[in-house]
Amino acid sequence: MAEKITLTRPDDWHLHVRTGEILKAVLPHTARQFARAIIMPNLAPPVSTVDRALRYRSEIIQAIPEDRHFTPLMTLYLTDATSCEEMAKAAQSEHIHACKLYPAGATTNSDAGVSHVSRIYPVLEAMQKLDLPLLIHGETTDSDHDIFDREKIFIDRTLSEIVKTFPGLRIVVEHVTTREAVQFVQAASANIAATITPQHLLYNRNALLAGGIRPHHYCLPIIKRECHRQALVAAAISGNPKFFLGTDSAPHLQQRKESACGCAGCYTAHAALELYCEVFDRANALHRLEGFASHYGADFYRLPRNRETITLRKNTWQVPAHYCVGTDRLIPLQAGERLHWQLSLQHDRL
Ligand code: DOR
Ligand code: ZN
Image (cartoon, rainbow, N blue to C red; front, top):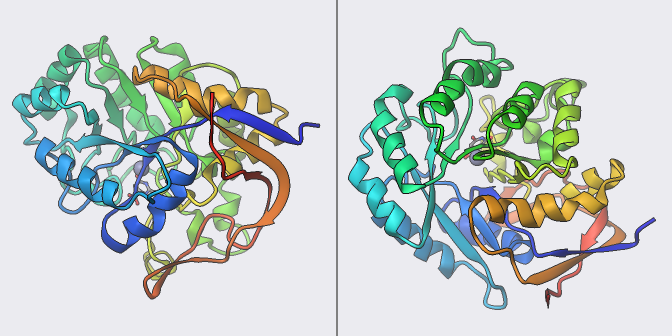
């Protein structure tokens, strides 16, 4: 049994850090583990222009602890009004790495998202030409669609069309949650990849709803049945470079989660790598963690792999019950529970 594992320092290819006090509270957690992260643009108002993304980047950089090396990789939020000129500007910026498609109304701060994908076909055409990756929140928004079916319907009706129409476009199907999504990505060409979150690897929907509603397990796309969780674990540990780490860590204050109408999002940045390590260890696949966490995402985004290493040791520790954000609280995933792997703080160079 391995007692420690050393990996190339990983990156988080899907992260929400917000702004202001929350940003200051959460960024040190991410920067402790990850060298880089793809920063989601769903602020209010959305980060829909290069200028806004660069301003947001500066705010993030201010929040990095002095003793950490961390690089935010910025993205733009696509709207019905996004122009091809803005895409050209994005492709020229060394700080913008992708654009995010939120179907309007699909999730947190997505009201300004795309009302119908055909509206942005000229923009997707431009992105294909410019080789700018498209990140997709893959769910339909029709109220007639059952929330547990929305990912599958989106794949069948919208994603397949996008992939057919723009065969050269690099696409990340973000936070896949179903067996169907895994199969779609596996069968697609090499320019189609997917991120997988720790919560979708750890839990099925019983963890959300059986024995009481657990709002801290509520995120979008919603956690599905056990057969889907198993398909996600199999994909993550398969060594297929199309599947890589993206936490979707999405902090919301305690009152916004524990509410009659609670926000979607699991906060996982406090122990992201340890949570993934737990999953890979249970599946006897620790030898596959480095590819998933540290290699495949960088390769897909055509960025160099990191040169530092990090070490996780087998050591039982208790996740704090909460983290403070001013006078408010943030409840982390697995609050008060025990984890069996712990990150050593020192980063060594390869
Ligand atoms: O659960 C989620 N939370 N899913 C998303 O797509 C957005 C995120 C957020 O920003 O809170
Ligand atoms: Zn997200």
